[in-house]
Length: 108
Ligand SMILES: [Zn+2]
Image (cartoon, protein in one colour):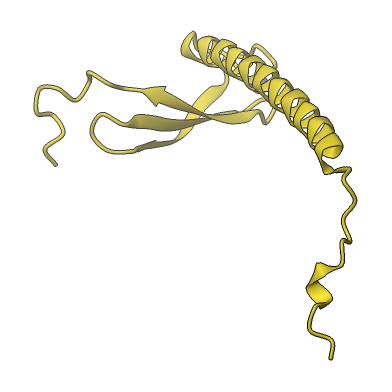
């Protein structure tokens, strides 16, 4: 009878070795994505800065328009979408509006 078929050692003892490489790989990926994210946030902030001053961050024309604006509720961040009528640039930003909802202006 074949009752002890589970005792067959199929996996060699190499797995601890692979784990170190996997960990290293994950670490590199994590560091890379954090760097990209910080860079992305920085660039996003610069673009929003330009838009706040009234011009498109891409073509520097004063043809930027607000196309969409929605709020995530009282105290939550506001999602605004801007579009450039001149070069087609569009981007959405989440703007933290904390403090703007304090005086009961959010009653509706
Ligand atoms: Zn533009």
